[in-house]
Length: 262
Image 1 (cartoon, one colour):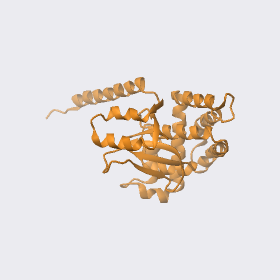
Image 2 (cartoon, helix red, strand yellow):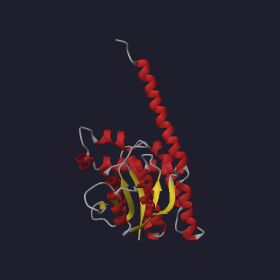
Image 3 (cartoon, one colour):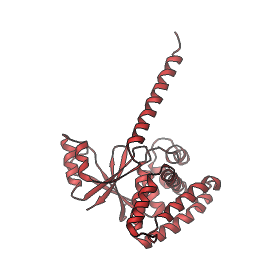
Image 4 (cartoon, helix red, strand yellow):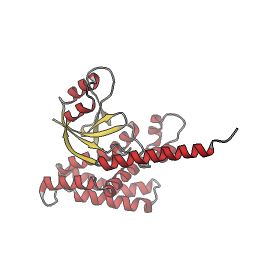
């Protein structure tokens, strides 16, 4: 029997090229972070779908706006960072606490065994972004909000923030490995999970990523789940459990966007 190597190779190349074309189309047409949009824009996506229409109606009782993120596998981390910094712009004391925590985070990661030279550039950029959105900056809240939006739509800055948050998440998983091992299915060790599912860019996030990051930064997140689950209401989940949410996200299978309460 003839081997299929050549044909298989062509097919693989076609699949890879198709994937690249799709990714290019997404990056060309979808900003990393959109402007604020009315939540009602979701109706158009689910036109004729009674289950989702009812749930969007339920959601609109609690939220007025949505801000979309690019669906590139980094959407949770990007949405988290943008939403939390947006909250901190209006809360000077919380901003100062977070800035101190961020400054000290690099040394903590080094103590956990992360190479200092790997962290250097990412931490430096992370701190630069935090400084650029300080509530005390000239121009007031509106100017700082504009700066935040500009930063997060510059791929270089935006991606460096995502990378650093992935490293913080990975560090938390390592620090409390015995606890987080319970969340991992199959035979993967925490170390393998960190290297395969947390640290690489474009890897989607699950509950374990959210809990670890929220715990590491002391930030509460409420995630509203828009899916085909029973009932006409959207189920919300707070991370960590019992915390007061500062960040509001909507989850649809495989994707996170930012929400704004009424």
